[in-house]
Amino acid sequence: MKATSVSDRELIREYLQGNQASLEKLIHRHKNRVFAYILMVVKDKQLADDIFQDTFIKVINTFKAGTYKEEGKFIQWVMRIAHNLIIDYFRKSKRIPIIDNNNEKFDIFDTIKFTNDSIEDKMVIEQIHQDIRDLIEYLPSEQKEVLFLRHYSDMSFKDIAEQTNVSINTALGRMRYALINLRKLIREKDVVLTV
Image (tube, rainbow, N blue to C red; front, side, top):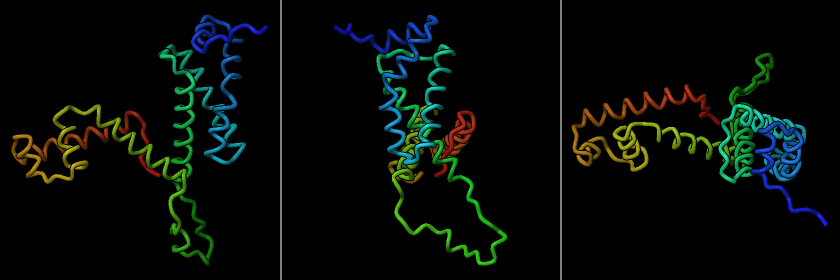
């Protein structure tokens, strides 16, 4: 008769107390699900292996740093790390286009994309939008309000000024500071906002 399975929470606690075997059990328990997800998205076994390893390196580093917050959602947290690493890979791989300048038959029109966005492109764009929404939450409430009204409600600064009961110059100033603060947050948090 097999004993009841030890919970993820218990394995994490044991690992943090120095039991390396608990980490192995934890990884073994979830490796198929995490790897299958990564492989399904990147469609390259070697790349999937690399991202899988990077995922669990991040998990281990978070454990060692003592910053893991136990909420009973270990696998969701690991899948989110894997998802973010996939997004990072796609962003970085498309950030710098490679052009062979020595090719005399090079035609700039050959580099234009004529197809619809791939699933990877859509994931990256979705993640960029989520990253921006997350960063906006760090802004002071007046700046956040003006930014949302302007970009998400498509209001003019005149309408924003009327709705928020401030002058147009104040609304413009709040928007200016919101954008300055967003740029600073993007640099501080090393967020990549390119496809």
